[in-house]
Length: 249
Image 1 (tube, rainbow, N blue to C red):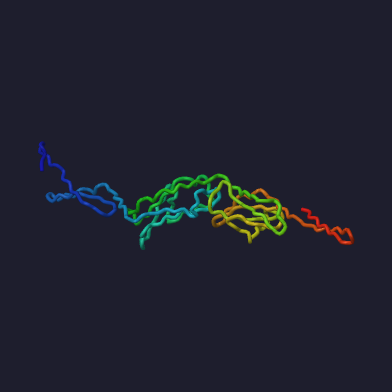
Image 2: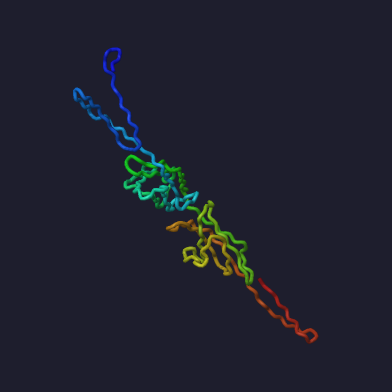
C-alpha cells in the first residue's frame, strides 16, 4: 500500500493475549529477506481471580507502644500455588516476602496504612487487599483500681474492679497484695472484678498478647477488716445475772 507521496505505509499486526508476561516483537520482510531488530519490551501484568485478605492479629482497635502484633496476608482458594507476597508500604518488601509481617515492640513509626497482595509469578498477581490502618499510641496505658468499699464486713468481702485507661479490648488483670513487685495472686487472674475478704494493700495491672504486654501498675487501694469483740459485763439485779454484749467496729 502506498500513500499519496508514493511511499509505503508501515503495516501493523495485532495479537490478543490472555497471559501475563514480557512481550517483544520484530518485523520480517520476505523479499528481500529482512528481519528488524527486536522491539522494546512491554510487560503485561495479569490480575488473577484469587482474593488477598489482610488481617491484624491480635485484632485490637488500639495498639500501644511496645506491643507485638502480626499482619497476615491470606489468599482465598490459593491451592498449592507457591505464592510470594508484596506489601505496602514498600519498606516491608524485604525478600523473601512471606505472608506474615510481625512488628515486635511497635512504635509510632509503625502507624500507617497496610495492604498486601499475592504474586503467583513475575507477571501475575492478585488485586491489592483492603487497607488496614494501624495507629500506635505513644504512651503505655495505666491501670485504674476501684473498691466498692474500703472496709470488709465481718464474714464478708468487698469488690475490686481493675480497668485500663484509655479503654481498649483484650485485657486480663493481674492482682497484687502487699508490694506491687511481688508475685501476682495467681488464683485471681481475671477479665473482670474480683472479691477479696483479706485486708491489705492491693494493686492491679492489665496484660494482653503473647508475649504479655503489661500496663503501668494502678495506684494502691488499702482494704481493712472489721473486728468484733465481745465484752461481758455481769450485774446482779434481783439476783439474776445480766449480760451486756458490746460490739466494737
